[in-house]
Image (spheres, rainbow, N blue to C red):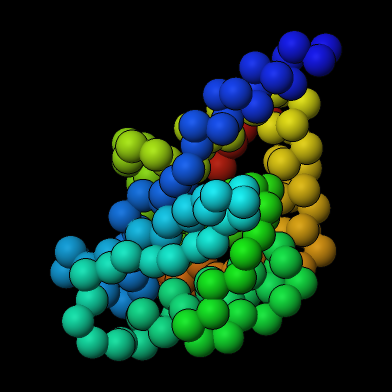
Length: 174
C-alpha cells in the first residue's frame, strides 16, 4: 500500500498547473470571448487560482463569472474572496473550484465541453487512486447538494405549443 501512495505522490508531484477549458462568458455568446481559470502550485505545495480572458471591458456577463467564482470559493473554502485576492488552498479545493466553474459555465449556455487542453484539471484527477477520485466526487456532489450551484443555468424559452394536429399520438396501452 505504501508503494501505491509513493507512486501517486511521485507522478502527482509533476503537476504544477491545472486549467479549465476556455469557457464561454454569459451573455457574450458567439463573440469568441472566453475565460479560462488556472490553478498554480507554489514551492510549498499550496495552490492559487487566477483567470485568463480576452475581454477588454467589464460586462454584465463577466460580472456574472466573477460572482460565480466568488460563490465557488465560498462553497469550497468557507471564505469570501476579496477583489484581487487569491487565497492559498490545497489540491482538493483548487480542483473542486475549477470543476465547479467549468461545469457551471458550460451548463449555463448548454455548451458542449470540447476536448481537454494541456494541463486540464481532469488530467491531474486521473493521476489519483480510484478511492481518492471517488472521495473528490462525493465531496463535490454533497457540497453542491447542500450549497447549490454557483451559477444557475440560463433560463430557456419554452418552445411554442404545437397545434393538436402536430402533437405526437399518445402511447397506446399494451
